[in-house]
Length: 441
Image (cartoon, rainbow, N blue to C red; front, side):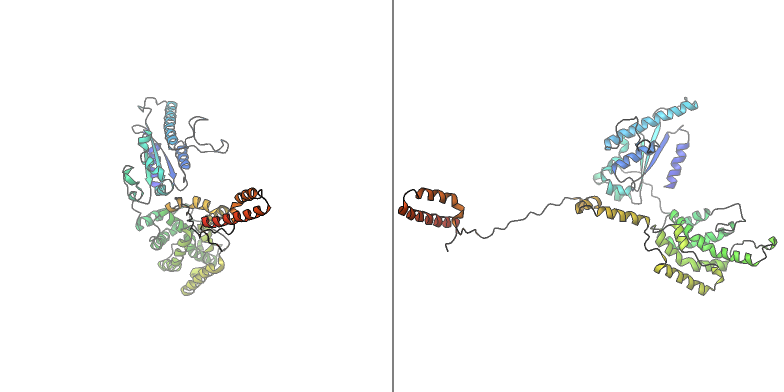
C-alpha cells in the first residue's frame, strides 16, 4: 500500500503535460462499513474536503444547499460527475493563475483513481456494491480507475454469474526474510552526535543487524509484514542493548572521571557478548509477538515491563538465564495489571453493555453476519388436535328455546300445563342429547 501511495503522489505532483492530472483517494472498508460512509469517504477524499464542526460536519457538495450525494448509488454517480466538474474548473483556475493557458491541456484531462483497501470485506458488508464498483467507469462515463487491494484472490471475491468484468491482476508476493532484514537494518537511525551513548549509537549498527536477523528467525513464520516487524524491534531493542550500555557505564565509573583521556571509547560488543545476548533474549521475542502483534498492549508499556536487570552481563551466564526466567514467570503470575483491558477489549465491553439492553431479535439483527441469521424464520404453526366429542350434560345451550316453550305451555292451565311442561322438557332434553351424539346417563 505504501508503494502505491508513493507512486500516486509522484504522478499527482507532476505537471499534467502530456499526461492527465490525477486525483486519487483511499478508502478502507473496515472504517467505511456502510454505503453512505463509503460514498462520503470517496467524494471527500477526491476533493480533499475535511468536515469541521464550524460547518456542521457537512460533506462536500458542489454548491451550498445542493442535493446530497450519499442517498443511493445513483446520487453517488452524480456526485462523482460533480467532483470531475469541480476539479476541472479548479485546474483551469490554477493554470490561469500561473499564466499557462497555452499548455495544450483540454478541459476533460482529469483522471480519478479510487483505491479500496480490504476489498474482501465488501462481499460480506456491502455485497450490493461489489458489481457497481467494478463497472464504475461505464456508469459514470468518466476517466476513472478503481483499484482493489486485498489479501484474498479475486476468485474468492468475484460475484456470481459473471456480473463484473475481469480486472488486471497484480499478484504481489510477501517479502522474503532476507528483504525484511535488509529493509529494517537500513532504517537504523544515525545521529551526528557520537558523544551521547544510547541504544542507537552508530557503534551498535552491526549489533542491530544481528538482532533483526534473530527477530526474523523467530517471528517470520507468523508475520510477513515489515511494519509489524519494525514495531516488535522497537519494543525489544532497548532492552536487548541495555546490558551493553550498563557495562560501558560501569567501566566508566571505575575510571577516573576527572581525566578525560582515560574515558573509555564506546566500541561495538564482541562476538561472545553478541552470542550471549542472543541466548538471553531469544525466548522473550516469542512473548513480545504474542502480546504486541494482537495489540494486547503497546510497545512502550511492554518494554518498560520487560526491562532486564541492571548489569546483566556481569552475572554468570547460568545465573543470568535463571534470573530472566524467574523474572518472566513472576510477571506472568502476578506482575501485570489484571484489571487493565486493552483498547479493543474496552470497546467490546461497552458494546456488550449497550447490547444487553436490547431485545434478542435486535442483537441478532445488528450483530448477525451469516445468511442464516438474516433470513426470516417462519413461525411454527400449532396444529390443533381434535379432542374427544363434546357431551351436553344439560340443556343449558337451549335456554332461550326452552323458555319460549315453557312460556307457551303455562298458558294452558295448571294441571295440563304441568304435564305438558314436563313432557316438553323431557322431549327437548332427549332430542338435544341425540343431536349432540351423547349418551344418556
